[in-house]
Length: 318
View 1 (cartoon, rainbow, N blue to C red):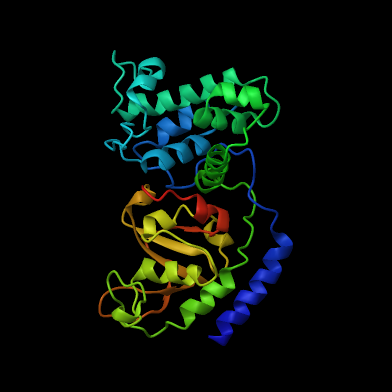
View 2 (view 1 turned 90 degrees about the horizontal axis):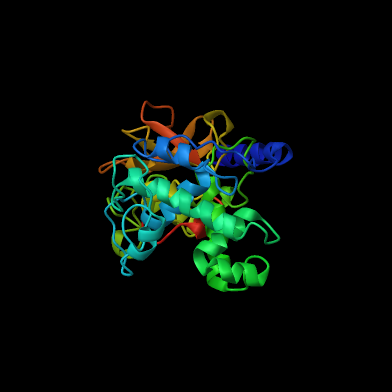
């Protein structure tokens, strides 16, 4: 245990000198962040106009529907892009050129979401400030309010919406520089280390009535909760809690993920906490105890560097 904590401190002292933050302006998508079925659509239509990019479009779709093409909201917003029928009647497009505009078909709905964003961007193009932020504000509050306010209006819901999408954008974008280290990572590792040797429990959250036992995502959630970061309960949602470092850029505290489908983050089935040297703290399976395990296995999917803003931006319903 002491060796691991020394490793954490050493790596973070080095990383603090090297890291310069998430790259900006990238239109690349992080590996597997968008389900393979939709990735070509998001990549293509996310470049429709300068106010959007594929990662931003992906963030909107994830926020709205969690990639579920059949979801209906209490307000009757429909499909993967969550269009209200009235808005769809005006702004829906025949994205796949098959002769109809189907609100339920991602081949129409994803292009329509991009087209609607770009239409809003044109409405507010002369407003001072960041064009993308103004477009998102218009999506939430209406173009008139953005124009009248001279930028993002002082409406808490609208300001939160803009910040949420811009933060989630970083989770879907392929980083172009080294990702900033997490300030809370060492504390999360320290918490997880204290659970080494604890018997696994499916659905375990570490509560007293469960004997302090965990499953994989229950452990990672509790570890980051101990340092003030609230993660979603399941592994595939935890993947979107921050940007995604490459394998050779991993730092202690990164969450590492595993899946039988390496093209789709929604198929992730397992998560651990990286501690350095190719190892993670892992709650592996029923009958086993929390332990150190190697991460370099054929089902290794990727990693997330958890951020406070990234975790706060995650939708409660995906």
